[in-house]
Image (cartoon, rainbow, N blue to C red; front, side, top):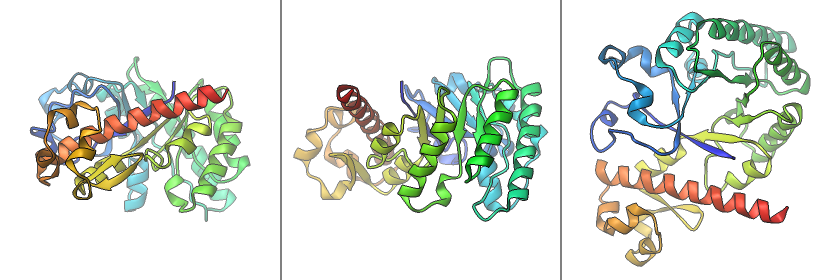
Length: 291
């Protein structure tokens, strides 16, 4: 079953630790970044992340954010934090491969990532499953990474670096290549494709899951998924909102959704999550009927 992991900004945004954003009893699967937990007091409060959020948790290593900000994370500290948080799925601290990297640099980054993966395998909580993050832009590098992870017994994989490509076609070519390499194994796609207008592409590529936080950005800007795309809530009418059967739209007035305050932003977030899940189910059904 194809899954959507809704990347949450917990605990990155302090305001989101209060109502209406807490408690986060999502029914959906969630992807979190480990990075903000290093500067959080939440662990001191002995908070159970899984119990608080109430769903499957995919915990990323924060490698991409750290690389984009120009600083290094310690693989032991990351692995120790992963062990404390006890997420269902955990990603080792991977070295981000850039398109301009030479073959030598790319291979060294793969070696570093494999070394960091061994650290995580030694320190992780016994219930956590490690995901092998695939980096690189050539078949040779991607295959090497995949094979090294398999030697460590890893059975699930994820593709990163898609945000570096602005052209959707190039992204899809890279996804198709990795899907060929990882055939028979679960493949997650990091970022970018959890979007109503791109979801069909990622499902048709025979991947197994995708994450993203564009739904949060759209919601905070007052955008509402209507007829398979984001539209400004101010451009819609009461009657158009009434067409949606989700609990948010049925139980709230147009005014509640369009005020622009924290409460209405939260309502839009929940509507957009429901709409994306409904769209996923519709696309999966269409794909099944075609076969």
